[in-house]
Length: 573
Image 1 (cartoon, rainbow, N blue to C red):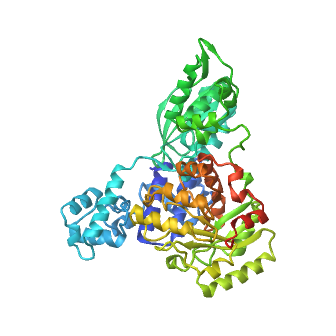
Image 2 (cartoon, rainbow, N blue to C red):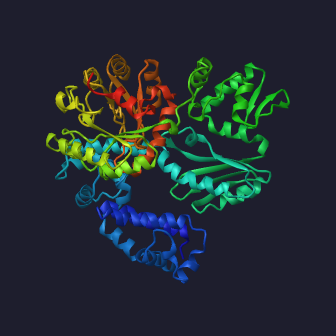
Image 3 (cartoon, rainbow, N blue to C red):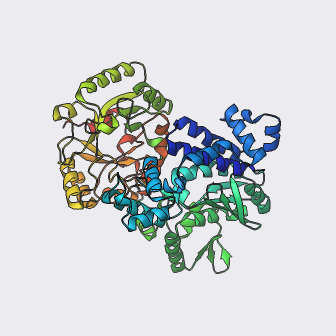
């Protein structure tokens, strides 16, 4: 008999196998939903099955309930076994190699018997893959590169995925009667792009009760280490987590200590020693006397520093920047200060929703304007909008505007061509309200070529926003090569701004380059790069990245109202 977590793992395997087969994505997603429902289940699974009440769980229909019951009662699934039999050996492992498709897996399995990443690696190293029909030296080389990335990857997961676990976990801990306070700490609180561990800090007089409650979170697969005030666990899926519970008087200090990166805490500890203090997990000591600190702000006051936000607790340079900061400077940008959604796609290119659906959702979120920036003609793979359809889109924007309050701005995400030019004629560009200028092709140009391409684009007379600057996809595609500082110099001297892209798979540009751009007085927009109404809610990821780069309200163009924003980004001079 399998328990709920074993069944959840089986459902996730079925979902992955269905995706690899290219089955209906909604069917695969149904199995994922079922796995999530089981992981969060607090009722007795056996009772639900025996009483035929599984369909009462959100997302579980009759067919999925039958699958779960079969796994629970027999320990096996006929459908899962059929899927395994239909697909090549090692399909799940091989699917992790970039560029590997089901068709290629079958061909390699039939020709060489390959059923694992190690077997694929050896076949590539001995030149056997290139000899298989339909393959060649180039594909063989790309497989080796992908395998190297696969073997050397760390165990970090994307921030967006970590939050899907951390947020319900935090709600669970806060639901404990003994917990007076609780917060997520570590890399998640710093809004890092990837996360190796979910760290929580709680405050309670009875720490053991909170630890017991924490360990009962349904998605915990294994308790690895447990004490009266600490608990280390492994969640289903492999990610690790830890709870630290401290007396309420030490909560602020513990949260601070568990938030800062190691290099930051080391530098802050050195500063404390210069002042005759000692900094540890419980706060500051002067000799044997513990200094009172009910908030993190009080810790910084004891150190003679302005408050440093969690997103800026990475290294010594963040402390130096805080010391040098002008006291009249605005605080870091917050999501509530943004008035408009920038960089949004609709069904006119590769978006999932209509102009009106995007507008209604943005309006419901309290936004005052929305830019419709579908792909331009060069992005043929994304249904780029040709001149013949552009007028049709403008007419629809005008019709929708009559039915919504949110101001709709007509724009484009225009491809930066190899020459550095944009792929709409100037006469069209000048009629738009906003231009996002991005690179989607020929990303393997060398650094000198790419720099010339971007500098040329930035120097074009129209105002443009440099979109997802370096083209990275986190953990999937490295930023393309270019001399970033040269491009930033060109942006500073031109009619241009820079996007902080809130797509959680991009988060581009990186905070280090945001800091360099700020030194040059460059202006920014914080976007979602939304291709659906649900993606509009990714704005918080853009804000988190912007805060890591130190952005303030006065530097962010879409913190302006509709009229001021439209004037600031107007393409025509």
